Length: 190
Image 1 (tube, one colour):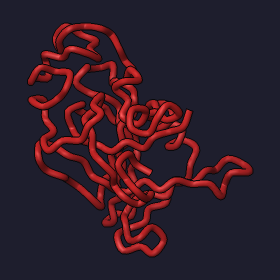
Image 2 (cartoon, one colour):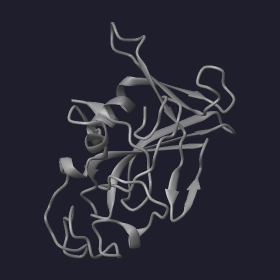
Image 3 (cartoon, helix red, strand yellow):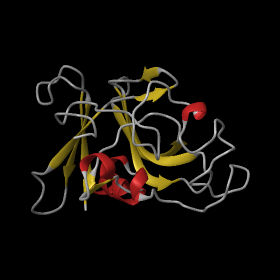
């Protein structure tokens, strides 16, 4: 389940990337490592345009909310681990009101590996937080990885998905998104 959730279908808490506490406002003025502006970053910076360069591209353990809240055996997934789910699993959409996942919209992500085809996780369409708003609940899913997007320090990789009911088509991919947005975290065990 997600960090802050009590059951797998629950959205859980939302976190800005590299932060370990949820909050009421998600923008650059409130981000822990940017001194109020996206171009004044103090950590996880790979270009002087963005702030003080340290070339860190993966979260330190003290900034990994899964590790801090759930303990030593847990961590946030990497970009590559999410990509493995995209490449090697069957993604089955369940809309709002479904009977299998307590009526919560989201994807059942089922293993296609021999001997493990009965294994799956459920990723609720939890939306995301921007400023003080919760957006796109029931339509989009948004989950942080521990990997910075090296094309720009203001973005980290996240698993983003949606289901378009008009054309009956699912979209799921890794995107570089602004670190200041609030997204869910689905931990993995070491």
